[in-house]
Amino acid sequence: MRLHLNTSAAFDAPLIPQDQAAFGPSVVAQVRERLARVPHRPTPLHGLPGLAASLRVRAIHVKDESERSSLGSFKALGGAHAVIRLVLREAGRHLDRSLAAADLDDADVRAVAAGLTITCATDGNHGRAVAAGAALAGCACTVFIHAGVSEPRAQAISAQGAHVVRVDGNYDDAVAAANREARERGWHVVSDTSWPGYEEIPTWVMQGYLVMASEAIEQARTNDSMPTHVFLQAGVGGYAAAVAAHMALVSGLAAPRIVVVEPERAACLLASAMAGRLTRVAPQEPTLMAMLECYEPSLIAWRILERRAHAFMAIGESEALRAMRALALPKAADPFVLAGESGGAGLAGLMAAAASARAREQLGLGPDSVVMVFNTEGATDQDRYRELLARVEQEA
Ligand SMILES: Cc1ncc(COP(=O)(O)O)c(C=O)c1O
Image (cartoon, rainbow, N blue to C red):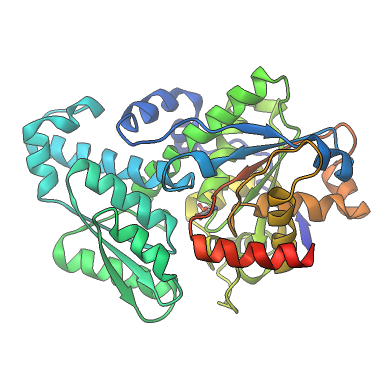
């Protein structure tokens, strides 16, 4: 485990006005309305008292996104929300009137939607969510995947009605292919990462995640267990930044300490924090935390996390497996939680930090700490989950 405290001059500065407007509590009702037709349900916030006792903290709560929808991941919220906003905007321009979520069934809106093609590149979960949003809105959808995406993940995207194109190379090659086809054919790219000049649609993706963040805060308030620390795993950082921004905008000075957790093999936010600017890292050997295998942060995410993250951590492969085991073979009265390879990475960060006296001190983790983590996916690739679980059970 590597831990870097945020030393940026921007740390603790307020979010820029654009991010305050995008991720504050006032947008949640509209996001929920747009997602009303997307099949999903509130997810539980489980307490893990047995694990909390063994890690010597007051409480650990896990928001279990494996139960969000049949997609088995919080990503269901982001891609679908962005597609719906995009369709409403395009149809509104075409029909020259402003449209709300309820207009998605309007025949004129559906006629415009039928002429749109949505595209994206994906490691798996985002493409599935975009495909589901496109199917719901009645658009065509083509999803680009790279050589390393497993066949069950590819099939799960096709099952949503999308055309899946596998390209040689890695995630970056899939992104390049999606962008090239979109330019040539007039398609719309719905990406979960942002770069200079491309921020609007990734912001809409991140806004979808606010359903999860706001629910978690409401549940913690009801249980009188507002967190002092939140460990958030990151790929490009969009999910961690959406949660961190929302918590800061809701709680102000009482906002919890945010710790960003990445695989050591793809720690682009940690590298950015150490360099003091958005930094791309060189691709390495693939990590088993496949959904977190990203080599360049999202521009919006970096801007938010540079201000809001207390610390950035990188964890090893065996640390991720240990967290999967802790969730699958729980202590005493703790519930079983179905956590996929990337789902338990936030908890893995907490477990690694709690085991180190220095990290405990640096993060202010102690017997009064109330920690929140998110299980961001269940067994989204069933074969892989079974294989890894068999491995961790053997090691147990
Ligand atoms: C299960 C899961 N967890 C975490 C993440 C990380 O999200 P982000 O890339 O926004 O950092 C992803 C991204 O696809 C994911 O699928």
